[in-house]
Image (cartoon, rainbow, N blue to C red; front, side, top):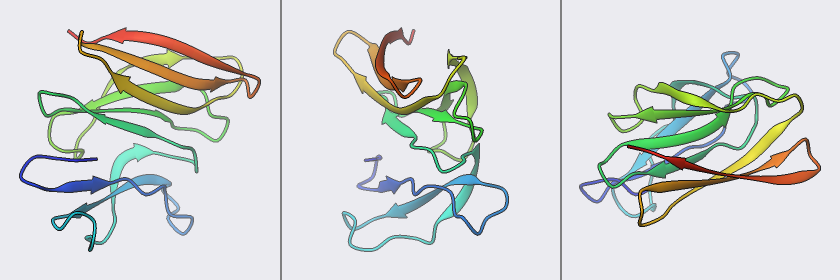
Length: 130
């Protein structure tokens, strides 16, 4: 994820050795040639894909699952580069597995979300951030 001041941010999945099962973040200042050591952030993750979208105002938006059943699918926002997160909403509460989210922003301030719904179909939603 590109950040200000020529920095990049990577979000490796939770470490299997970490009993807290948290997402981790690492920084690069040289276009990904070298990275800082991964550090856990306050978002649980049970080996499920999360997707992070940098917003034009500098905030970060993440779609993620926080339990092994992969529901509900949640949306959180960070104003400090991913150190702290606030729940922005529940994207899908189930029943069933909601996984592999992808977020894309358009020029009209809308966020487009696609994800696997119950491991059978692709769901699509449009979110407005005002």
